[in-house]
Length: 627
Ligand SMILES: CCCCCCCCCC/C=C\CCCCCC(=O)SCCNC(=O)CCNC(=O)[C@H](O)C(C)(C)COP(=O)(O)OP(=O)(O)OC[C@H]1O[C@@H](n2cnc3c(N)ncnc32)[C@H](O)[C@@H]1OP(=O)(O)O
Ligand SMILES: Cc1cc2nc3c(=O)[nH]c(=O)nc-3n(C[C@H](O)[C@H](O)[C@H](O)COP(=O)(O)OP(=O)(O)OC[C@H]3O[C@@H](n4cnc5c(N)ncnc54)[C@H](O)[C@@H]3O)c2cc1C
Image (tube, rainbow, N blue to C red; front, side, top):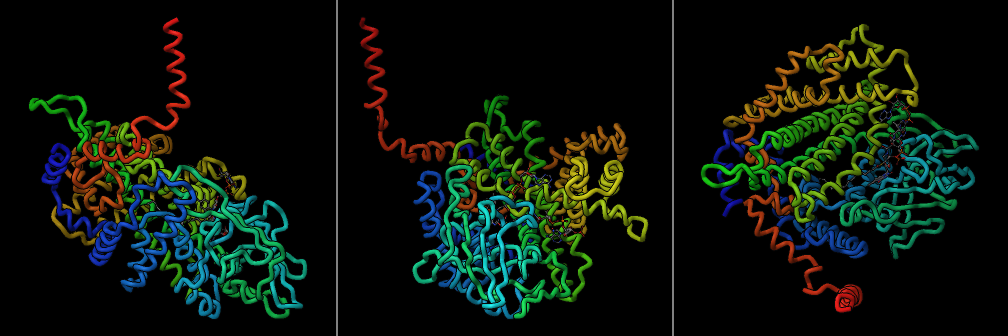
């Protein structure tokens, strides 16, 4: 069988220990065991099938998502899954749903911004799913500009309550995931008003729906904001609209770790930086970076396996056409994405460590690394999601026409993934935050602070910063060029963290060699892509540039025999890949053909509508022809 033999032959060429690379990719043997077991549990459960998603109406699609979420919760309880195993299960169900925001934002917000007392009250309810929460920050009129939010939370000393209100149409909460139809509660971000004085944005826990009949509570108008990009995709998520008409909540439902409001209506600032109100966004951004490596590796796995199965032109002596993976143009498009998937995996591991470290320091009232954590999570979220969205689209193109079929898995993956460039912070707005951080850092150089990083990449950042920040500017006036310096800074971090990964103990025959090749491909690919920066800033000479290019091409040849084994190391099930082109067995053509007939359009040989619309035309033509 062509495809199968092709992949079997490719696997026999591997020059490294794939099982050890699986451990490197997973992060540890334990993590590999958990993800392998849970991904197969999900793959073998018919409730979690994904192949019908694009053919369902919005209401059926959503109801099916609720069914899956309920079944997932049931399995978590039945199997007594740990928090880690439950998170893996939700990941491999692979369908945006309210659970993502309940577990991924609502709970972390209470943990990060609630007092001990508030955590003791709300977390048990949330962990046991006795309440379902979402994160309601963005409004119709403001998303990026958090300080521009209009929702008000006015303290009423008569009743010891906050009055939550939507004063304008643009203050309507708009976009929060899980809000539209499911969440019973929300963390709502609004302007704290005491005695007519505006104290800025804070978080408030607000109940939205009755726990008895799920109807909206008095003063609450709530619904879904409508269809989004694509047919299946993110339409499994009920992104919602929410308006308040003077809704009253107890004073103790303002999240008070950062600042407190006393019974007398006095605002007391605690010793933690006010920016902790933004803490959930830092947490989610670091998670989004590791999500990027998952999404990109998924697309690369599909495109790599298909590139080894697909043969086109280049008849060889044995009468067989050439595998498209052997074309240099295919390699120059595909292998940098393979290298990027590994690079984002490792920088995601580092970012997770940085986030944990910042949190530990916060416990000890050490806020020194908070600015760097913000800049790194913001910048790397922006860099990796933009590269991943572009990379998924490139993988679709690498698969030719069949990449455009839903059965390839790539259109759906693209449609689900691309909002990552916007949610949790628009990517340009986040790069501007990095630019601001760089301006401040550059101004502190020489005062005992010295830049660190790989020479050429470091030089590029330094030179770009010197060129572009003649004077310190406010956030709004930062030039587009500074965004370029911010991207350069983030790429420096990615390369540096890949190099640091290689300095760790890496067991397994040939594993370190393959990772070194991928690290060099990533570094040289970025250098090639931004050659203008490196040359214009004098970081490299034209001669060095052409040497780098030659080295890049030779690295592709080094990776070529190992490409299939490198994507096998992601250890994805066919269920998770959800792609005829990316099947482990390479049995592409028979399965493509089989999938086609499942389309409802093929339920009848003559399509509905023929008699009403087509036959009259043909008959008319026939009559005309006889005249
Ligand atoms: C495999 C693929 C398929 C996967 C399928 C499943 C996936 C689907 C499920 C996905 C689930 C969830 C996805 C996530 C859902 C999305 C959720 C959201 O979108 S929530 C809303 C997110 N919103 C934002 O990100 C808003 C962005 N805007 C901001 O963060 C701020 O407005 C700003 C930082 C841009 C500006 O802040 P502002 O206070 O107005 O002004 P300054 O810039 O002056 O900042 C002041 C000061 O604070 C520092 N700062 C800013 N932010 C932070 C921070 N987060 N932490 C720490 N410090 C911060 C800033 O540096 C300034 O410091 P100075 O010292 O004064 O310089
Ligand atoms: C699928 C999805 C899920 C979401 N889920 C949630 C959720 O659960 N909870 C929640 O609260 N929100 C959620 N959001 C909202 C999301 O966080 C915002 O859309 C995001 O923060 C971007 O803000 P915005 O929409 O106001 O974009 P805008 O800021 O209006 O961006 C529009 C354009 O203006 C540019 N721009 C804006 N400001 C500047 C500036 N200062 N300088 C230069 N250019 C600028 C941007 O780069 C962009 O090109 C979700 C959004 C999506 C798409």
